[in-house]
Image (cartoon, rainbow, N blue to C red; front, side):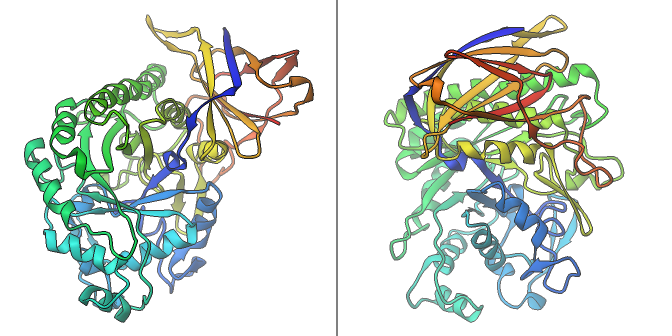
Length: 495
């Protein structure tokens, strides 16, 4: 199918906040323990207990911000249990995720070390569901107060003299559900109360994020914005791409039927409507767009892999997941005036993970490769790109076949990313480039694609899917003609 697009390199549409490429690591399954933390006495090579292979892989995708400790876990996490000598830390049961014992060996100091090693901003989610105002207030004091105080002194006793810099703090998580089953009016009042004591010490200015809506709960957004907008810097939104039914069967991550490919793409694109409608409500109370929309949980959610603990949410990751990530990023770019951060769920071994581990072995997923290919968009300037796209039709339903986005970085290089969502048909895109002398450009490309709809990497075949050089394009005058194979993610660099 033929598609036409016009790229205006000299028409800028604002900045793509690098935090749109953020991540989320919860105390869930094997995300933290085994996935990130192995302990200092592990035979797996590590830096102060954090496994080196995962660390290096995450550094390579320029993780800008990392959310922790949850998720549902955040509202039963008591931070004081996770500091001090590890052998004397309180053991607790992780009631949300598999009923396993949490030994609290990975706590505040370990998380902040991880963020320092990754050179990323920490985003900490505080406990509103089962925690007190004092507990939250003291956590912020422990982390950020430079002077003498009970919490700052305790931090020093625990080996950290210097206060940490903490920019992002979430006041509760999913308080409409696992975070307390609250009504929006009640949570809004609690939010106002709790955030009062999330203080800015010694020049550390915290960006406060209120717990926002689930999917299309527009009333939640309305109430929070109406009652508490002036007390927040960000408002969250959660949306997972699930081809089946959340409770009756979500669908398999591999070996799925053809129609589930199409359903997954259609549901991934639905986030555009959700962002638009929630944004309209936010605009009513915040026309200057001071408050960021923080989509701090998104991604595919399938049934767990056979034989694994159902509470561990471990799923394989295929070329389908890669396309879901690619189109999400294009939609986030389109809403970059309001969307200031997103955090894919999750970093390692859980849901739509970047990385899967098995003992000392590690593999990179197709989703990881999209993050690596798209890192060129981080903090880049969004460019005007108008496309006339034909439909991808399946069983009488239609969605756009191709998704595109373009940005320009500080060096003046233009990057165009394209996704062909069609699992069967090629796509031809004629891109009319304006505002650039095309006789003096060089173009290079990379592609991530596969020959089967559930192609994935395994510990036996870790490089089954990885980016390759792409040269399926020709430049004739100002028209760049691009040939995309089915189910492909392509990034072109125009210098």
